[in-house]
Image (cartoon, rainbow, N blue to C red; front, side):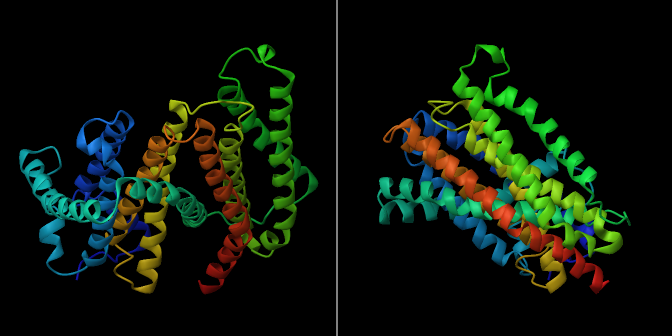
Length: 365
Protein backbone atom coordinates (compact mmCIF):
# COMPACT_ATOMS: atom_id res chain seq x y z
CA UNK A 1 0.00 0.00 0.00
CA UNK A 2 1.25 3.50 -0.73
CA UNK A 3 2.69 5.85 1.82
CA UNK A 4 -0.03 8.36 1.17
CA UNK A 5 -1.56 8.82 4.54
CA UNK A 6 0.80 11.03 6.42
CA UNK A 7 -0.19 14.08 8.37
CA UNK A 8 -2.98 15.98 6.74
CA UNK A 9 -1.20 19.33 6.59
CA UNK A 10 1.97 17.94 5.05
CA UNK A 11 0.26 15.46 2.77
CA UNK A 12 -1.77 18.07 0.92
CA UNK A 13 1.17 20.16 -0.23
CA UNK A 14 3.38 17.13 -0.95
CA UNK A 15 0.65 15.36 -2.90
CA UNK A 16 -0.79 18.29 -4.86
CA UNK A 17 2.66 19.24 -6.22
CA UNK A 18 4.11 15.74 -6.22
CA UNK A 19 6.42 15.08 -9.20
CA UNK A 20 5.02 11.53 -9.29
CA UNK A 21 1.65 12.77 -10.58
CA UNK A 22 2.60 16.16 -12.05
CA UNK A 23 2.46 14.82 -15.61
CA UNK A 24 -1.25 14.02 -15.21
CA UNK A 25 -2.06 17.55 -14.01
CA UNK A 26 -0.12 19.05 -16.92
CA UNK A 27 -1.93 16.71 -19.31
CA UNK A 28 -5.27 17.91 -17.89
CA UNK A 29 -4.44 21.56 -18.59
CA UNK A 30 -3.02 20.86 -22.06
CA UNK A 31 -5.88 18.57 -23.06
CA UNK A 32 -8.49 21.04 -21.86
CA UNK A 33 -7.08 23.87 -23.98
CA UNK A 34 -6.42 21.65 -27.01
CA UNK A 35 -9.74 19.78 -27.06
CA UNK A 36 -11.74 22.93 -26.37
CA UNK A 37 -10.01 24.68 -29.29
CA UNK A 38 -10.64 21.73 -31.61
CA UNK A 39 -14.30 21.59 -30.55
CA UNK A 40 -14.83 25.34 -30.92
CA UNK A 41 -13.74 25.30 -34.56
CA UNK A 42 -14.75 21.68 -35.27
CA UNK A 43 -11.22 20.88 -36.35
CA UNK A 44 -10.68 17.29 -37.45
CA UNK A 45 -12.38 14.13 -36.20
CA UNK A 46 -11.24 14.83 -32.64
CA UNK A 47 -12.82 18.27 -32.59
CA UNK A 48 -16.16 16.87 -33.70
CA UNK A 49 -15.99 14.14 -31.04
CA UNK A 50 -14.44 16.24 -28.28
CA UNK A 51 -17.22 15.49 -25.79
CA UNK A 52 -16.54 11.76 -26.11
CA UNK A 53 -12.82 12.38 -25.50
CA UNK A 54 -13.54 14.35 -22.32
CA UNK A 55 -15.93 11.66 -21.11
CA UNK A 56 -13.42 8.89 -21.86
CA UNK A 57 -10.65 10.68 -19.98
CA UNK A 58 -12.93 11.30 -17.00
CA UNK A 59 -13.92 7.63 -16.78
CA UNK A 60 -10.32 6.44 -17.11
CA UNK A 61 -9.09 8.76 -14.35
CA UNK A 62 -11.98 7.74 -12.12
CA UNK A 63 -10.89 4.12 -12.60
CA UNK A 64 -7.28 5.13 -11.93
CA UNK A 65 -8.28 6.85 -8.68
CA UNK A 66 -9.84 3.61 -7.46
CA UNK A 67 -6.88 1.37 -8.27
CA UNK A 68 -4.02 3.76 -7.44
CA UNK A 69 -3.69 2.49 -3.81
CA UNK A 70 -2.94 -0.99 -5.16
CA UNK A 71 0.64 -2.18 -4.97
CA UNK A 72 1.50 -2.34 -8.67
CA UNK A 73 -0.39 0.76 -9.80
CA UNK A 74 2.64 2.96 -9.01
CA UNK A 75 4.54 1.29 -11.82
CA UNK A 76 1.79 2.08 -14.33
CA UNK A 77 0.65 5.60 -13.51
CA UNK A 78 3.26 7.33 -11.38
CA UNK A 79 6.81 8.61 -11.74
CA UNK A 80 9.67 7.68 -9.44
CA UNK A 81 11.96 10.68 -9.78
CA UNK A 82 14.20 9.81 -6.78
CA UNK A 83 14.78 13.45 -5.92
CA UNK A 84 16.48 14.22 -9.24
CA UNK A 85 14.03 17.02 -10.04
CA UNK A 86 11.52 17.51 -12.83
CA UNK A 87 13.73 19.45 -15.25
CA UNK A 88 15.70 16.46 -16.45
CA UNK A 89 15.56 14.25 -19.51
CA UNK A 90 15.04 11.22 -17.25
CA UNK A 91 11.97 12.77 -15.65
CA UNK A 92 10.58 13.82 -19.03
CA UNK A 93 10.92 10.28 -20.38
CA UNK A 94 9.32 8.79 -17.27
CA UNK A 95 6.48 11.31 -17.51
CA UNK A 96 5.73 10.21 -21.07
CA UNK A 97 5.82 6.55 -20.01
CA UNK A 98 3.41 7.22 -17.12
CA UNK A 99 0.90 8.67 -19.60
CA UNK A 100 1.01 5.75 -22.04
CA UNK A 101 -1.38 3.49 -20.06
CA UNK A 102 -3.81 6.41 -19.71
CA UNK A 103 -3.71 7.17 -23.43
CA UNK A 104 -4.15 3.51 -24.42
CA UNK A 105 -7.09 2.90 -22.08
CA UNK A 106 -8.65 6.23 -23.05
CA UNK A 107 -8.44 5.31 -26.73
CA UNK A 108 -10.21 2.02 -26.06
CA UNK A 109 -12.86 3.77 -23.95
CA UNK A 110 -13.34 6.38 -26.68
CA UNK A 111 -13.94 3.66 -29.30
CA UNK A 112 -16.48 1.93 -27.05
CA UNK A 113 -18.37 5.14 -26.23
CA UNK A 114 -18.56 6.36 -29.83
CA UNK A 115 -19.70 2.94 -31.02
CA UNK A 116 -22.51 2.68 -28.46
CA UNK A 117 -23.75 6.29 -28.32
CA UNK A 118 -24.47 8.92 -30.94
CA UNK A 119 -22.36 12.05 -30.98
CA UNK A 120 -25.38 14.27 -30.32
CA UNK A 121 -26.39 12.23 -27.27
CA UNK A 122 -22.87 12.47 -25.83
CA UNK A 123 -22.85 16.24 -26.35
CA UNK A 124 -26.18 16.64 -24.58
CA UNK A 125 -25.11 14.35 -21.74
CA UNK A 126 -21.88 16.24 -21.13
CA UNK A 127 -23.70 19.57 -21.31
CA UNK A 128 -26.28 18.45 -18.77
CA UNK A 129 -23.52 17.60 -16.29
CA UNK A 130 -22.78 21.30 -15.84
CA UNK A 131 -25.71 21.69 -13.45
CA UNK A 132 -24.74 18.60 -11.42
CA UNK A 133 -21.10 19.64 -11.31
CA UNK A 134 -22.19 23.07 -10.11
CA UNK A 135 -23.46 21.38 -6.95
CA UNK A 136 -20.13 19.59 -6.59
CA UNK A 137 -18.36 22.90 -7.08
CA UNK A 138 -20.34 24.43 -4.22
CA UNK A 139 -19.50 21.51 -1.92
CA UNK A 140 -15.81 21.71 -2.80
CA UNK A 141 -15.68 25.46 -2.15
CA UNK A 142 -17.29 25.07 1.27
CA UNK A 143 -15.33 22.09 2.60
CA UNK A 144 -12.05 23.09 0.96
CA UNK A 145 -12.29 26.61 2.41
CA UNK A 146 -13.10 25.17 5.82
CA UNK A 147 -9.99 23.01 5.81
CA UNK A 148 -7.75 25.95 4.95
CA UNK A 149 -9.15 28.35 7.58
CA UNK A 150 -8.86 25.64 10.22
CA UNK A 151 -5.08 25.71 9.74
CA UNK A 152 -5.10 29.14 11.40
CA UNK A 153 -3.68 29.26 14.93
CA UNK A 154 -5.88 32.24 15.83
CA UNK A 155 -7.58 31.96 19.21
CA UNK A 156 -10.03 34.86 19.37
CA UNK A 157 -13.74 35.13 19.91
CA UNK A 158 -16.19 36.05 17.17
CA UNK A 159 -17.07 39.73 16.68
CA UNK A 160 -20.80 40.23 16.16
CA UNK A 161 -21.60 43.80 17.14
CA UNK A 162 -23.56 46.07 14.77
CA UNK A 163 -20.32 47.90 14.06
CA UNK A 164 -18.54 44.64 13.09
CA UNK A 165 -21.41 43.59 10.81
CA UNK A 166 -21.35 47.03 9.15
CA UNK A 167 -17.58 46.81 8.60
CA UNK A 168 -17.95 43.38 6.98
CA UNK A 169 -20.68 44.69 4.66
CA UNK A 170 -18.52 47.67 3.67
CA UNK A 171 -15.64 45.28 2.87
CA UNK A 172 -17.99 43.13 0.76
CA UNK A 173 -19.28 46.14 -1.20
CA UNK A 174 -15.75 47.55 -1.46
CA UNK A 175 -14.62 44.34 -3.18
CA UNK A 176 -17.54 43.97 -5.57
CA UNK A 177 -17.96 47.60 -6.64
CA UNK A 178 -14.75 47.61 -8.75
CA UNK A 179 -15.63 44.11 -10.00
CA UNK A 180 -18.92 45.50 -11.29
CA UNK A 181 -17.05 48.30 -13.04
CA UNK A 182 -14.73 45.74 -14.65
CA UNK A 183 -17.19 42.98 -15.55
CA UNK A 184 -20.42 44.95 -15.76
CA UNK A 185 -19.27 48.12 -17.49
CA UNK A 186 -16.27 46.71 -19.31
CA UNK A 187 -13.89 49.02 -17.39
CA UNK A 188 -15.27 51.95 -19.39
CA UNK A 189 -17.05 55.21 -18.63
CA UNK A 190 -20.03 54.35 -16.41
CA UNK A 191 -21.99 57.42 -17.54
CA UNK A 192 -22.29 56.00 -21.06
CA UNK A 193 -24.50 53.11 -19.90
CA UNK A 194 -28.29 53.21 -19.72
CA UNK A 195 -30.41 53.75 -16.62
CA UNK A 196 -31.56 50.13 -16.87
CA UNK A 197 -27.97 48.89 -16.59
CA UNK A 198 -27.36 51.14 -13.57
CA UNK A 199 -30.53 49.91 -11.88
CA UNK A 200 -29.61 46.26 -12.45
CA UNK A 201 -26.18 46.66 -10.88
CA UNK A 202 -27.52 48.67 -7.94
CA UNK A 203 -30.04 45.88 -7.42
CA UNK A 204 -27.20 43.35 -7.47
CA UNK A 205 -25.33 45.24 -4.75
CA UNK A 206 -28.54 45.38 -2.73
CA UNK A 207 -29.00 41.61 -3.06
CA UNK A 208 -25.50 40.66 -1.91
CA UNK A 209 -25.76 43.21 0.93
CA UNK A 210 -28.99 41.61 2.16
CA UNK A 211 -27.50 38.14 1.84
CA UNK A 212 -24.35 39.21 3.70
CA UNK A 213 -26.37 40.82 6.51
CA UNK A 214 -28.81 37.91 6.92
CA UNK A 215 -26.06 35.27 6.88
CA UNK A 216 -24.03 37.28 9.38
CA UNK A 217 -26.99 37.62 11.76
CA UNK A 218 -28.17 34.02 11.31
CA UNK A 219 -24.77 32.52 12.09
CA UNK A 220 -23.85 34.93 14.90
CA UNK A 221 -24.90 32.55 17.69
CA UNK A 222 -23.13 29.64 16.01
CA UNK A 223 -19.89 31.61 15.79
CA UNK A 224 -20.18 32.87 19.36
CA UNK A 225 -20.48 29.28 20.57
CA UNK A 226 -17.10 28.50 18.99
CA UNK A 227 -15.41 30.32 21.88
CA UNK A 228 -11.81 31.18 21.04
CA UNK A 229 -12.31 29.62 17.60
CA UNK A 230 -14.95 32.23 16.77
CA UNK A 231 -12.56 34.35 14.72
CA UNK A 232 -12.04 31.39 12.40
CA UNK A 233 -15.82 31.12 12.07
CA UNK A 234 -15.93 34.81 11.08
CA UNK A 235 -13.23 34.24 8.46
CA UNK A 236 -14.95 31.17 6.98
CA UNK A 237 -18.25 33.04 6.84
CA UNK A 238 -16.68 35.96 4.96
CA UNK A 239 -14.89 33.68 2.49
CA UNK A 240 -18.10 31.80 1.71
CA UNK A 241 -20.19 34.99 1.48
CA UNK A 242 -17.61 36.30 -1.00
CA UNK A 243 -17.67 32.99 -2.94
CA UNK A 244 -21.47 32.93 -3.16
CA UNK A 245 -21.54 36.61 -4.15
CA UNK A 246 -19.01 35.89 -6.88
CA UNK A 247 -21.24 33.18 -8.32
CA UNK A 248 -24.25 35.48 -8.09
CA UNK A 249 -22.20 38.09 -9.96
CA UNK A 250 -21.32 35.49 -12.61
CA UNK A 251 -25.00 34.63 -13.02
CA UNK A 252 -26.05 38.27 -12.94
CA UNK A 253 -23.74 39.41 -15.70
CA UNK A 254 -25.19 36.71 -17.96
CA UNK A 255 -28.50 38.54 -17.84
CA UNK A 256 -29.74 39.03 -21.43
CA UNK A 257 -30.39 42.70 -20.58
CA UNK A 258 -26.68 43.13 -19.88
CA UNK A 259 -25.07 40.88 -22.49
CA UNK A 260 -26.27 39.13 -25.63
CA UNK A 261 -23.43 36.66 -26.20
CA UNK A 262 -20.79 34.68 -24.37
CA UNK A 263 -17.38 36.36 -24.30
CA UNK A 264 -13.93 34.87 -23.87
CA UNK A 265 -13.61 36.22 -20.33
CA UNK A 266 -16.52 34.04 -19.23
CA UNK A 267 -14.74 30.91 -20.41
CA UNK A 268 -11.53 32.03 -18.69
CA UNK A 269 -13.59 32.40 -15.53
CA UNK A 270 -15.00 28.90 -15.91
CA UNK A 271 -11.48 27.55 -16.41
CA UNK A 272 -10.22 29.29 -13.28
CA UNK A 273 -13.16 27.96 -11.27
CA UNK A 274 -12.45 24.46 -12.59
CA UNK A 275 -8.85 24.59 -11.38
CA UNK A 276 -9.87 26.09 -8.02
CA UNK A 277 -12.56 23.43 -7.55
CA UNK A 278 -10.09 20.63 -8.32
CA UNK A 279 -7.61 21.88 -5.73
CA UNK A 280 -10.28 22.32 -3.06
CA UNK A 281 -11.85 18.95 -3.85
CA UNK A 282 -8.43 17.29 -3.60
CA UNK A 283 -7.87 19.06 -0.28
CA UNK A 284 -11.16 17.77 1.12
CA UNK A 285 -10.57 14.21 -0.05
CA UNK A 286 -7.02 14.09 1.30
CA UNK A 287 -8.18 15.14 4.75
CA UNK A 288 -11.26 12.91 4.74
CA UNK A 289 -9.33 9.95 3.39
CA UNK A 290 -6.56 10.40 5.94
CA UNK A 291 -9.04 10.76 8.80
CA UNK A 292 -11.20 7.77 7.90
CA UNK A 293 -8.45 5.60 6.44
CA UNK A 294 -10.23 5.33 3.08
CA UNK A 295 -7.36 4.92 0.65
CA UNK A 296 -9.38 5.32 -2.55
CA UNK A 297 -10.28 8.88 -1.51
CA UNK A 298 -7.17 9.89 0.43
CA UNK A 299 -3.56 10.32 -0.52
CA UNK A 300 -2.70 10.56 -4.19
CA UNK A 301 -5.99 8.91 -5.13
CA UNK A 302 -7.48 12.36 -4.47
CA UNK A 303 -5.39 13.82 -7.30
CA UNK A 304 -6.92 11.41 -9.80
CA UNK A 305 -10.45 12.02 -8.48
CA UNK A 306 -9.81 15.73 -8.93
CA UNK A 307 -8.49 15.25 -12.46
CA UNK A 308 -11.55 13.16 -13.34
CA UNK A 309 -13.78 15.95 -12.06
CA UNK A 310 -11.72 18.44 -14.07
CA UNK A 311 -12.28 16.56 -17.32
CA UNK A 312 -16.01 16.32 -16.64
CA UNK A 313 -16.22 20.03 -15.83
CA UNK A 314 -14.14 21.09 -18.83
CA UNK A 315 -16.09 18.70 -21.05
CA UNK A 316 -19.41 20.10 -19.89
CA UNK A 317 -18.35 23.69 -20.63
CA UNK A 318 -16.88 22.73 -24.01
CA UNK A 319 -20.00 20.76 -24.92
CA UNK A 320 -22.15 23.75 -24.03
CA UNK A 321 -20.06 25.80 -26.43
CA UNK A 322 -20.74 23.33 -29.22
CA UNK A 323 -24.46 23.28 -28.48
CA UNK A 324 -24.56 27.07 -28.51
CA UNK A 325 -24.35 26.87 -32.29
CA UNK A 326 -27.43 24.64 -32.35
CA UNK A 327 -29.29 26.55 -29.63
CA UNK A 328 -29.51 30.29 -29.16
CA UNK A 329 -26.67 32.21 -27.51
CA UNK A 330 -29.06 33.19 -24.74
CA UNK A 331 -29.68 29.51 -24.03
CA UNK A 332 -25.98 29.02 -23.31
CA UNK A 333 -25.93 32.13 -21.14
CA UNK A 334 -28.97 30.98 -19.20
CA UNK A 335 -27.55 27.49 -18.64
CA UNK A 336 -24.29 28.76 -17.20
CA UNK A 337 -26.17 31.37 -15.17
CA UNK A 338 -28.36 28.69 -13.61
CA UNK A 339 -25.24 26.66 -12.80
CA UNK A 340 -23.69 29.60 -10.94
CA UNK A 341 -26.93 30.26 -9.04
CA UNK A 342 -27.04 26.61 -7.96
CA UNK A 343 -23.45 26.84 -6.71
CA UNK A 344 -24.28 30.01 -4.75
CA UNK A 345 -27.36 28.39 -3.19
CA UNK A 346 -25.36 25.29 -2.20
CA UNK A 347 -22.69 27.46 -0.55
CA UNK A 348 -25.22 29.50 1.41
CA UNK A 349 -27.18 26.41 2.44
CA UNK A 350 -24.17 24.54 3.80
CA UNK A 351 -22.45 27.60 5.28
CA UNK A 352 -24.01 27.37 8.79
CA UNK A 353 -23.30 23.63 9.02
CA UNK A 354 -19.66 24.13 7.99
CA UNK A 355 -19.22 26.66 10.82
CA UNK A 356 -20.81 24.19 13.23
CA UNK A 357 -18.27 21.62 12.08
CA UNK A 358 -15.45 23.87 13.26
CA UNK A 359 -16.98 23.63 16.74
CA UNK A 360 -17.23 19.86 16.40
CA UNK A 361 -13.56 19.59 15.43
CA UNK A 362 -12.54 21.70 18.42
CA UNK A 363 -14.42 19.37 20.76
CA UNK A 364 -12.63 16.38 19.23
CA UNK A 365 -9.28 17.99 19.94
